[in-house]
Each structure stands twice: as C-alpha cells, then as structure tokens.
Image (tube, rainbow, N blue to C red):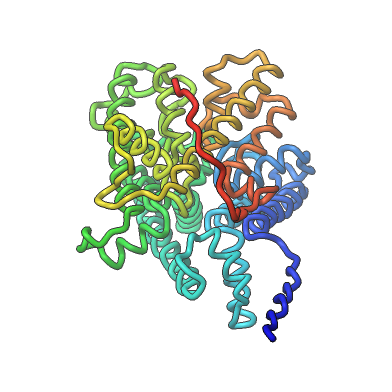
Length: 454
C-alpha cells in the first residue's frame, strides 16, 4: 500500500523588521535624537531654546549628509552644537546599521545572521560571512582618508592663515569629516568662498569628496586590485568612468558659462577660475560646499548643476542622488534599443533584466518626488521655478548647495525638504520597500502582449 508523505509543517514566520525598514528606523531615530540635542539651550550660541523645525531641519541635513541650513552654522550654534552636528554627519555617512553592527561585534563578539543581513543592506556587503571584514574595512578607510585630509588642512590653516593650534585642528577635522561624508557643512558663514583661490584647501576637500562619493565597494576593489583593471567589476568600471566624465563635463561647462560672470568667476585670475569651476563640479556630486556665490550663477549653470545633483555619486558611499550606475544603466539600455539589440551588454558582460527594472523604478520615483515637491513649494511661495527646482534637487540629492532661499521658506516648505533629504539618503527603492514593498515569487506567468510605444 502506497503511503504519501505527510505535508511538511510550515515553520512559523519570525516577526521583525525587514532590512530596509530597520535602516529607515535607524536613520529616523538618529534624526530625532539629534533634533532633541540641538533644541537644548547650550546647543545655540545665544543660550536659548532652538525651535523644533530649525533643529529638525539641521539634524536631518546632518544625518542625511546634505548641508542645507536654515540657520548659520558658524554663528548660530555653540561649540557643543557644532560637535553634535559633526557626530551626526559621521553617523549618517557611515550608516546607522553599520554602527549597530559594530556595537554588536564589540559587545557580543558575534552577530546573528539576521543582524548581519540588516547591516549588509546599508553597506552593500557581498555576503553574510564578510560583514565583519567589510565593517572593519569601512572604518579603517574612513579614518585614514579623514585623517590624511585633516592633516593637510591643519597644516594649511596653521601656517597659511595664522590659526592657533586648537582652532586649526578643529577646523581641519570638521571640514575633513564633512567633505569625506559629502555633507557640505562649513564653519564659515560664506561656506568656502574665502578659500576660492587656495588649492591647499580646495583640492584636499575635493579629493575627500570624490573618494567618499565613489562608494566603499569601489574603494575596496581599488585598494586590492588597483594594478589589475581587467579584474575590476562592472560596478567599479561604471562608477570610475561616469565619475570622470561627469566631473570633466561639469568643470568645462561651469568655466565656459561663468567665465565672465562678475558675481562668480569673473573677478578671479584664470588659474583660480579653473580651480573654482572644478570645485563647483565636484560639489554638485552631492557635497554642497561652495567657493563662489551659487545664487549669482547663470540660469544655465543652475540647470546643469540640477542634472549633476540629481545623478549624484556612486552606490554604497556617502553621495546621494539616483547614483551614476543607475544613470549609466539607462544610457546603456537606450543605446541598445537604438542599435536594435536584444541584450544590454556592458564592458563585455550582459546586464541582468532585473537591473533594468530597478534603474527605471529609481528614476521614476525620484522624478515623482522632485516634481511633487517643486509643485507644492511653488504653490506656497512666490519664488521662481529655477530657484525652487535647484533647492528641491539639492535636498533630494543630499547636496546642500543653495540659491539662498532655504532659510526664508515657510515651515511647511522646509518640512518638505526634510522629507526629501530623508528619501534621498535612503534611496527611493530602500524607503519604498521599508514602507510597503516586498518581493514575491509567482508560480505562473501571464501571456505576453505588446502595446504601442511612442
């Protein structure tokens, strides 16, 4: 007599947060803690309580490494408040879940598989087993780069600007951390305009921004296989090529269009104009410092800067935007369609079709968020479209450059920018999945049909 096996018992599903939800909650918790600290009287230089919206905006901008401000960082915050901002920048740049993983390693010397997956989502770790190695590598890389940049800046502040040792060290550390984390917070009211012609200040900051914007996977592979470019992954090649192209195009366009602008590059000597053009192009990759007055730039420069800010930097780094890999994938898809190809090939390898959908989804969600915010702020104010679009893209791309309108926006508009910074830091797909989305396997496929396109 044939007996059928008993149906397998379904194991009870463990309740808990999905990785994306845990990351979103971690960032949210850090923002709220930062808000509470910045509201305290001893966080402001005047010793008064800071209102909730200003504290929330500053905390979100720091944790999301944006750099947009509603109060002057240099004059409003006390030394304690500036230290809080610095710590929030560092926490936001590395990722809340990475810190949670490191605390777990330090206390228990062992993480559960679930916890490692949580942390790996933020750091883009390649597997569960190498999470500890990845976390350690990220910390070491961060410390080395920030220390190197801080050393150069310290020497320059100390010897070139007659800062005392303490002030030189504080300014060097703050701007090194802010630049590597692509935050854009500065200890000067006019950002870095006072150093527009000083390559010993501008170049180290640009190098830190570029390295932070490449992403940790790229930095790790370059460290291990710098002399073997044939072994580089598709991600590394796309990030490096796209970064070089966008930096070159951004620099060239800024220098050509702003060359004779009396409000920006016009008063500078030729070498300083080239340096300022390069500096602006680097900042548009989601850093946010400025060495010339952004509010006086031509409309054409604003628009191109919008595009650069929207694209952003590399994935799994400190930059924001839709990421250069997403933008490059769309270009490769378009090029394949123009050529009549059936598969998208990139650097000798075929691109997975799931990546097509992810890239398209990221761009559509990002465009929807930006346009919705622009429409809402335009309805609340009498500002021009150019300035509002610039501010909104800067918030979503976690850039921090401004045309000077952020502090004058109504509280409701500032809260919209807060939401955009949060969305831009976590990424449209990450935030969306944290709220509702889950991947589901289907056991069937529907018949295909092709609608008319175009």
